[in-house]
Length: 438
Ligand SMILES: Nc1ncnc2c1ncn2[C@@H]1O[C@H](COP(=O)(O)OP(=O)(O)O)[C@@H](O)[C@H]1O
Ligand SMILES: [Mg+2]
Image 1 (cartoon, rainbow, N blue to C red):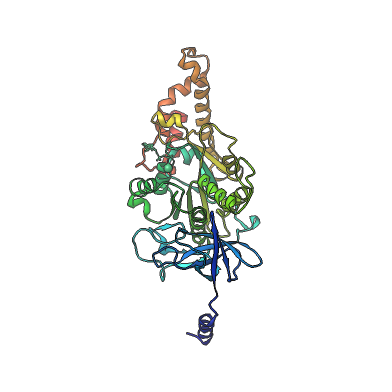
Image 2: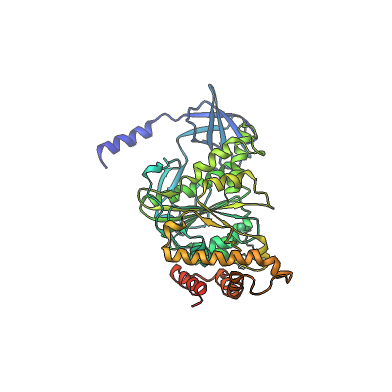
């Protein structure tokens, strides 16, 4: 150890310990007097959780004589006079290859019963600078998901941000797990935000399995966690992905769901005194979404491809969260309940789905095959009603006739069982054979 290190350590050890007290708690906020801290810093409140562990809270507002903090855990047990210690820094998050194969809670602590991360992982500040748009590489390389319908008709690029728009129970989680196993990304980071505990168990044990956990980091904040933990979990998953990207890796970040993350921000905003502005959502929700989603994308090295699920209930297309997400993302995949109930999985409505980088990441001859497939599927959709009521006469539209002939093959191509991973080359070859009739 160098002299400078010794001096630095001595300085840290000799720093006066600054403690204050809790003076009140209401709703989701705790007021603290007697400590100085910056907005975003973490403070520790002693004796709250009853487990001997201090309760951590984040400073969200400053006043002349006190701080307003929001708990990162259960507040039960906090009382007026509880001792508070300033840690002097914001939330620290573990990053690096030691995280691969691990399941973490919303604050980055392991919850899988595996070894502790202290000493194995690096710890960094949660907050980062988002790379400036002009310093970012363009999206130009394809990223495959191993799912035929996506890799050919909604092709993704490394560094793209895609939304998966769907109602509940139409196969979002199953598709995310299938993509996790089938993608050619170097590293996958999964954020499970606001799901029920049972769903998370099912996802990890049944959908993902041991194969899906390789080169994968999972960050989980279930619906019963405090809203600030659910909100931070989305940023923690993103921070872990950012570190892998900055090491030059191509990362796939899967977030389920951005809607529940927005709902957590709503709870946090309202309890901090913000007014509900747009359909019950305070302005901070619409500030948070681009801040979170812009962190994915290309860097100067490496990339984060972001895949965010968006809940759409009924046919509410003016729902403000879905609307905002659509405006930020560079593509969307639509899953429909009709297809799911008809047993067509993955229930992707390819005609309603679009990737804005498709032509940048796909060779022209393949784009031509994809366009032809869309033309055939579109003709089938438009003629469907006539066909069903028996009003379509064969020969009246050559395109519809050809589409009807090829329909079984097209459907077989678009349907794919969860265990099946198809390489993009094989998928393109098959699509070419179908649309050219060879
Ligand atoms: N690829 C698939 N193959 C067969 N069944 C599926 C598939 N995807 C979803 N399902 C069925 O739909 C149900 C809900 O899927 P899930 O992925 O949990 O939906 P969501 O996450 O959208 O709520 C599953 O329990 C399963 O019965
Ligand atoms: Mg689900």
